[in-house]
Length: 277
Ligand SMILES: Nc1ncnc2c1ncn2[C@@H]1O[C@H](COP(=O)(O)OP(=O)(O)O)[C@@H](O)[C@H]1O
Ligand SMILES: [Mg+2]
Image 1 (spheres, helix red, strand yellow):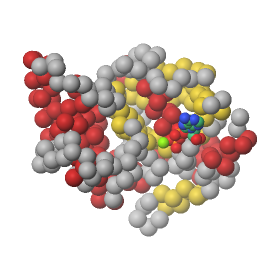
Image 2 (image 1 turned 90 degrees about the horizontal axis):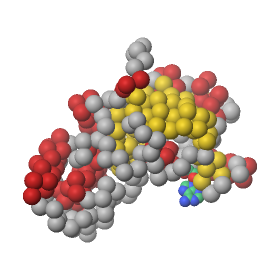
Image 3 (image 1 turned 45 degrees about the vertical axis):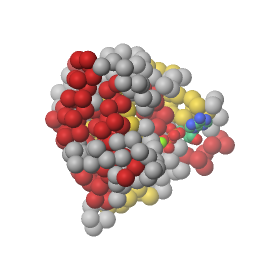
Image 4 (image 1 turned 60 degrees about the vertical axis):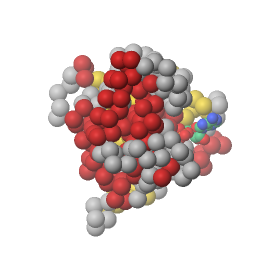
């Protein structure tokens, strides 16, 4: 077991809860994420995984409890967080080049509003240098100068990860980055994220609806439920006992011949809407 060292804590929640439209999404969430950890955020559709990332960004207020991100109570305006929102692919007609999309991570608004190139000088030169560096880091050099709409899903996702990394974040929040990718690209993007995590010491929280593509790369998983969350190594958390306790309904965890985990009986939180105000 890793020794407890509070100096390495980058995300800390204590009895945290949040509401959207008057409805409690999740509550009593207590957990800590440390520097350099690769963590998956899991749970059924609608359980509040995207909302969880927004809370860490300071875009979604807590209704109870405490939240600390990189030593402050407010994640907003924190350039040390890289964020990749949940999204679909770029339209094939998108003309903007990959390198320019990556550059938004340097001199655009962090969440995608481009600024005119009016700064010039040293800041811009440093930016160009850093953009080239992260494009190389994610292995996108050969296609970064083409219109991003012409890139494949996996290539687009690597470019967006590069964008999130430009500002040298200590925390990377990725909302379902593997969703639109085929199996081969899911594996290679997962391996890329793990290597970024290891080589840059950045803590990664990655939202996924299927843990299997990332299982071998992960350090920890967070399973979210309305009444709480459990965090721990995948083999301890993704078990029938733990998930049955967390959701209060019988859940089975099966393992197929290829070692893939299949969670059976997991509630779809949409079926609980009527009872949850
Ligand atoms: N703008 C909104 N207004 C009302 N309800 C919302 C809004 N955004 C999200 N929700 C609800 O909040 C819950 C959590 O959403 P979300 O965090 O997107 O879940 P997940 O990412 O786990 O699928 C869902 O039940 C969703 O329907
Ligand atoms: Mg979501």
